[in-house]
Length: 177
Image (cartoon, rainbow, N blue to C red):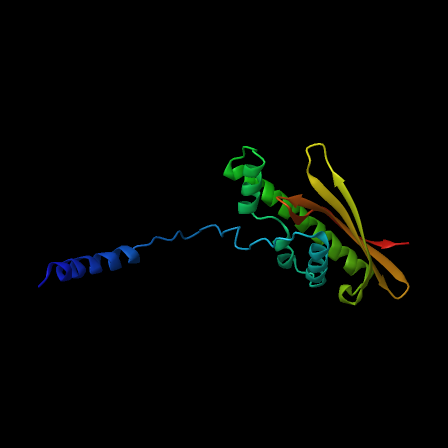
């Protein structure tokens, strides 16, 4: 028997046993970064797809519009901001929680007003661009809707990170009188 065959026969069972000994925790916390954020270079493309996701009225469809932890970490590294991984995770979770809270308020408003969100027709889109003292770009986006004689508006703040647009904060839906 050759030297190579002996090594193959000796190490093959060891590699199978080593691979089979993977330990998994019983109460393992699920990974929060299972979704990947969608990157938009242009704000109108973000607004169009955000509207289509919002029509579904499911919060899981809105998660890709928020930057994930990896993207936030890259952004902070690019801006030379020194954040630990847990601080970056905290920032990302705060953005998600704020969006989830605002989404629940919108659902309550829609139920209270007895509106079928899928039947609303978008009539106008308004952008109000801005820049803060640190040079960060943002935009107040307001989408106007109509259903018969009633007019509605949905607004949010879009933020620009590393030349990509994301849904930031302050998601609101209301009736225009």
